[in-house]
Image 1: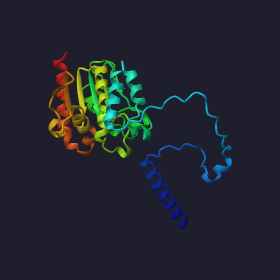
Image 2 (image 1 turned 90 degrees about the vertical axis):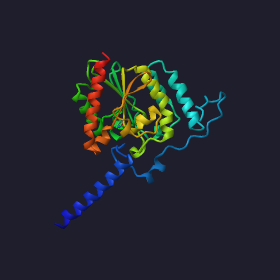
Image 3 (image 1 turned 120 degrees about the horizontal axis):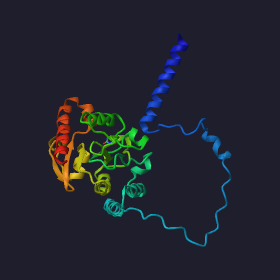
Image 4 (image 1 turned 45 degrees about the vertical axis):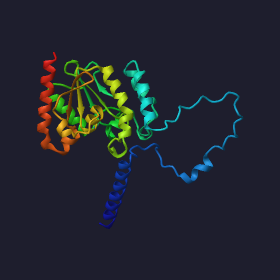
Length: 271
Ligand code: URA
């Protein structure tokens, strides 16, 4: 009995320690066996003698981005120079103005059909999106898929008239899923603008407060923006409640359903 209790306690402690590491983002083992750090110096190869100065200077590193305004200007130049979606993805991957890139596992660029009539812009990747490199694949994403399915649409739909294309304001996961900062949003906005230009959807859906306020450059709250069609980049645009909010506030699903029906009706008027 005593042994069993000890075992239970050890298990609980180990489990709590593991949960804590997962919470910090250490979600993958990288070696099969544990490594004793104290053994390492002896095992490491001897340091190589200093290299002789090379005759040709090394290629210049990318210029450091002095501040947000520089980073935004750099992002704008990179985005505008991207002739297609693959080039835009590469430009975002190469953009070093934002430190989120250093802590993320994968670039989350987009999912769905490039020919879709509807483009959805969300906020930022969470843990599951960061792991898979795809937007909206966690719990909120699964709800989004069910919402779209309810009006006969989906990211996998083979018919472009019923397909959606999904991206986010931020391509990198913010630590602990914190809100993207104003600087981070400003840096990635030019990439999203170019993304919309290149996909050229008939309709745009801004999913949640961060997406709507960043793209529309407004301080208005999402509860007053949602459900109200506006024009953005010369096409109808609908701000909606974020599915993560709907998971926390199931009573708001009624408004979300009204917005989905409004989206469906708008698509019909445009055909
Ligand atoms: N929430 C978002 O806004 N985007 C994602 O990709 C996942 C969750």
